[in-house]
Image (cartoon, rainbow over all chains, first blue to last red; front, side, top):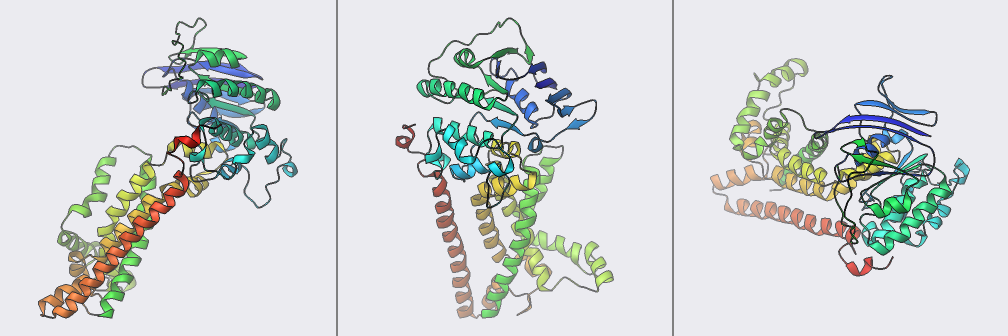
Length: 235
Length: 233
């Protein structure tokens, strides 16, 4: 159960949002610059909210009153970045194994993980890519590698920042289905940020419409439906 | 002729080793921070690059000389006089090459996508691991360029070295000093040979840098610009 109330002052407006979410895919939907990515960064521990409280299950990640702010590395929250942020100097294999504790025998089964490295790579259909560098992958492949890398450490929450915006329409639809499947398999909450109505429709179990950092019950904002999936940079 | 060459290499290598560590750390610390006075601080760091070496030499004398601010302490506490020793030559070489290393390192760190470091953090890495596994390997070509440039600059240092280390053959007489005094005393053959040596060293360093950094980068980027490989999914 993700329980978060986040307040954060930005130059143009202030974020003030409450989230309660258990399992499934929560979509934060809003125009560019509505504070979506900042919310994800606060959840992940990459930015510090100015107030509020973030808990996941029993664990407290951030609490302004108690002065708690768990660093990102200790939160075990998976994060798929907008541009995937794959390490360009490492092969797919090294990218995917980056989050596992170092050592010659990275046998996940022995350490009590649910899925072995092989199973994770198989699920995402990237096992044949393991010796390639990110620059040699297509957009869809990169996205799968980024997902595998984030899931490999078996996070308790997965954050996705515009995960499909850089892909063309056909791959996007395939990956939408896969993403949904993945969530059903892993049974952890996914929080996904998008400004694309298609993605909202295809993926959301629950949705929060964001406008200038605040949830809006009636979405007054609609982006014109673009087929090309033009990438827009958000805050 | 061999003495100034060995001394020059020794002085330049030690100076670059010191500069590499200090300038890289300083660049890393300042790269992702903004604070009041950062601009002024950076100007001061770059200053030795634009000041005449004699000004630096004068400054170093004031600092390290027998009655200097630091020199007096070293003399009182350790009975160590630093000016006119080869340590003074190292310090002079380090001071003039520091800005080159700092500038290169700063540009190299700035070129590393911050989201890669963020990704490493979300994958459980502490700051040390983020630096060693992500930032450093990616900034590496730029850092290497800084190393070679500062080495070449340290090797060629003349003015400040002459002022703080003097021209003591076998002790502080580096190649540039030896060339100057060889010409002064009319020993044109020695001067010519030393000129050839230092030019050869500098060309070799720069040539190797070009060759090597290109190879290193090609490994990651192969296929990166070819769209043909991207189509299949």
